[in-house]
Length: 234
Length: 181
Image 1 (cartoon, rainbow over the protein chains, first blue to last red):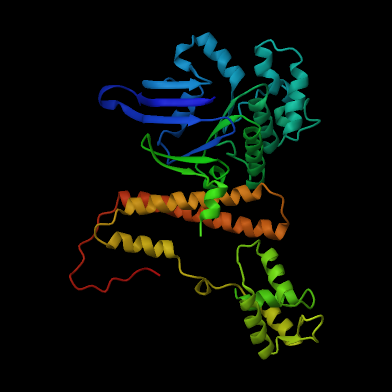
Image 2 (cartoon, one colour):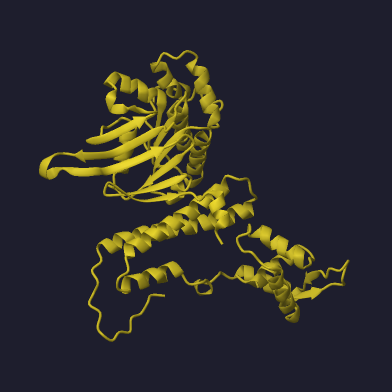
C-alpha cells in the first residue's frame, strides 16, 4: 500500500496581494521500500512539502494521505497520535531534549503512547545506529554525529512506516553524514518509505527517485535506472 | 594518464603477461576504464621499444614482461608530476551548452534539465555501488566519479540560475565568436 500520497496539493501562504504559492498542484506517491529525495533552490517549496507530508501543515487544496488515510480528516488529537506512531522526523536541528538521556529521548514517542518496555526498544534502536552503551548519556555528553544518530534512532523507533528527513546531515562532516544516509537507506530497504529534503546532490543520490522543485512545481524527476535498462544501454 | 603509465605501475608489482596486466588494470580502475588486449600488447611493444619494460623468456606460451630501471625512473617521474588540466579531455557538456545558447531555436533550459537528469542518474548508480563492499583503491575511484558528477550538477544548477537572468547581447553580423575553452 502506498505509504504517502499527495494528490494535487496546493499550498498558498497569505492572502490577496501578498499571497505566495509554495506548492502548485504537486502529486507524489511514495511506496514501501522507496526513498524519495526532494531537491530545489531555497524557497522552492521543499520544506513545505515535507511539513504537509508530516501533517505539520495543511494544504490549501488537495489531499495528503498516509497509509491511505487523509490527514485532514483526522481530529487534532488523532493526528498527533497518528504522527507519533507512523511518522518519524529527522530535522537539521536535532530537537533532542537536553534534560533527557539518549534512551529517554528515543523512547519519548513510545512513552507518550503508554507503550510498555519502551526502554528496551530504545536501547535496541540505539544499537541499530551503533550507539550501544550510550543509552544513559545526555545529549551534551555526545558528539554532533552521535546526537544526530540519537535523533535518527528516535525517528526510526517503533513501527514507523514513513520517515521524513529535512537536511538530516546538516552540520555533519561528510563521513558522518554518509553514515546517517546509510541508516536511512537500510530502514527503507527494510520496508519503510522515506522522503529526504536536501540541497546536496551527493545525498540525494542515495534515493530511488529524485524530484526537483522550482517555484512550487515539480520540474523534473530522476528515477534510478533499473538493472535491465542498464544492460540495454550500449 | 596514459595506459603506458598504468602498465608500468602494475609491472612494478612484479612481472606479468598481457592477460594478467589487463585483469590487474581492470581491477585497479574498478572496470571504469575497459582496456582491450590489443591495447595492452600495443602499449607493451612501445614500452619495450623505449626500454621501459623488457620481455622475459616465454613460459607455457605466455611472455611475461618486467619493468626496467629506466621504466622505474619514468614511473617515479610520473607519480611526482601533477596531472595538468590540458591533459584532460575537453568538457563536452560545457561546450554543448555554450553552443546551445548561441544556436537559434534551442531550448537551453531543456538541454540543462536533460543533462541534469542523466547526471543525477549516474550519481545514483555510483552511490548504489558504494553500498557494496569494496577495497579502498576502488572506493576512492568511485568517490572521484561521485564528486565529479556532483560538481557537474552544481554547475548545471548555476547555469539554470544564470539563464533566468540572461539577456542575449546583439551579435554583429560577422563574428569571431570565441567559445570559452
